[in-house]
Every structure is written in structure tokens, then in C-alpha cells.
Length: 416
Image (cartoon, rainbow, N blue to C red; front, side):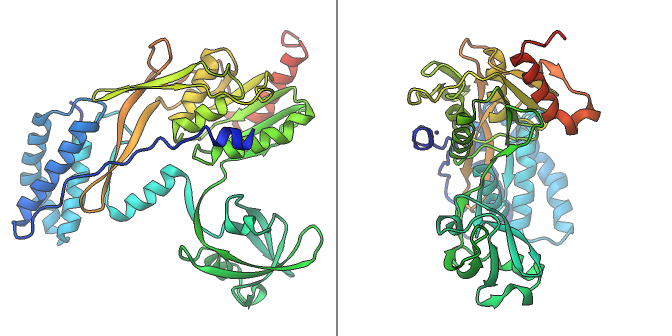
């Protein structure tokens, strides 16, 4: 086998789809080190057997135990590593031995990496949400996360920070400023700044907290009337980000929209579901997921208030870094002939993924269902194939090329 939202409208439609599961208790104190390892391996094996999309066979587990005894354990012990290290390293080998060879998501994560991975999966970050650069008058805010405490309290792009945590920023230097912008969760930081719009002074006390990072950004196309949104990743905040930008361009009567999903690794399918309502008939089936030990889960297209659905011509840019919910979204738009897909074929990972807790604080990130079109066809493992490929030497001009394509289409000049 197998060594393998308008804003409120959409936001209210969105619920996180990544799940957590409880796990068995840790090995009893007093047992030998090897017995503790074996008990822990059984915990990993049983969790995969219950939840993994593909069948997990005992024979593969037994073969791993033989390899562990003869090679893995002696080799790691020679390195003089701790029992925790031996357990974690070996469990990672076990997951690799049990999963499918082409499964690039499922993995074992020790406690610290598990925490970091969960933040990446959910698109969360803990800091003040401020990015900028130092000039001779202070620290200019280049970008501020819209869900950060600083944004909620009035700070905006182009504001000028003059004092940070009681110290003049000019006395700190760039490196120390950046350190102070990422304090521990719950930390309170006093910021004195000048408004970029009026240069009036203001002072706020902001809290370092967990928030969903902004993932949708408007990009220039160079073509009048054609707009582009780059979606870097899907998370729970994506529908709100997307809706805000849709609201900003809708009054301009766009002639077309490019969605740049290149390098987007995906995220919760419900984020893709939420934004699909802008472009597809509301209330119809979107996709469904089905797994070996998991009941079929159907996703329909949400119902938005009247007037929010648009019929602008669309192009979607993809490449081999487009995966999961991103290729689900592009594949559905292509299959329904709602958008032309341009670029390179996608990753082939339209799979439902979950995170499961282990007894020692480690986690298993696992694939537990495969995506299907409403008519039963599974999303292909070789990815979504574009309608038109783009030469690699034109990758940097892809947005402009896609915009030109839509412009010609909107003006009936595709054959010229």
C-alpha cells in the first residue's frame, strides 16, 4: 500500500469546516519506554484507521513496527535524543508509512509545530497587525490588518507612528520596531501616531490578539473596466474580504473580473462556497465530499440578498500551487462554464482535511474525504486543467493577459 458574504450576508453563511477530534489517553506511567512508544503508535494507527479517507491496513502497521525495532529506534537512540524526540520522530515515520504516496497533506505534527500549523491552516496570526517602514519622521504604516485591534481603534494605512510602547521610534531602529509589533498574545501596547490623511495626532492602546489575516487584495490590470482580485488563501475572513472588495468595484460597472488563485493552497471549502454565491445560481448544489468512514457532506451555493449576484465575464488564473478549496472553486466555475481558467494545471488536492488531537498535544493532519461534482464525478487527482495555458515566460504578465482576454471578449473582438 501506501508508504503515503452583502458583508454580513456572506459572513453569516460561513462556518469553519476544519474539525477537531478527541484522542485516547496517554500511556500509563511506569511502563517501559518501548511499551510507551508502542501504545502511542497504536493511538496514531487507530486514529488513522477511523478517519483516514483510504483504508488503513494492519499489515502496514505491523511492517512499520518491524522497521522501528530494527532500524528506526536504534538509529535515533544513537543520536542521544530524548524520549519525546524518539516518539515524535517515529510517529512521523508511521504516518508516512500508512498514508497514500500521493497524499501531500496528511502528516504528523509534534506539539509546537502543531500549534503553528493550526494557525496556518486557519489563516490566523497573533500580533498587532501592523506592517510598515522607517523614514526620517517616523514609522509609516504600509498595511494594517482589517481585523486587528489597531484597525478597530482607528489606525489606517499611511499613518505615521512616532512613539511605540513609550519610546520614540526613531531611537529604536527598524528591527526593534518590528519586534515590538509582534508582542505576546494579550499584550497591550501604547501607540502615538499622526493621521496620514490629516496629520492630526492620536494615541491608542492596542492589544496583541489572534485574528484572521486578510487574504483578498485588488491588483491592477492595466485594462480599463477589468478588475482583478488576488486571493492568496482561503480562511474564515476570506468571504468578508472578498465582499468588501466586490462592494467597492460594483458601482463602477466592471466589464470583467480576473481572480488570481495562483499559489493559493486552499483552506476551508466553506470559504469558497460563500464567495461562489456571487457568480453562480443561488441554492443549487455546489460540490459534495465523501469518505470511507464519513457520511456524504453536500455543499450548496448560498442564497445572497437580491442584487448581489453578478454576471461579469470572468477569468481565473491557476498554477500547480493552486490547491484544495482554490482548485475546487476554479474547477466548479470552469465546469459550469462561468469562467475561463488560464495558466497551468492545479495540484489535484480537492480533499476534505481535518486536524485531530493526540494525547500528548501532538496532532494528525489528515485527509478524510474526496471532493465530487454534483453529478458524482470526483475532482481529478491530476488537477484542474486550464482552458488555455500561459507560457512560463509570461507568468509575470498573467493578470494583464487575462484582463485583455476579458476586454476583447466583452467587446466582441475575440476573433480579431
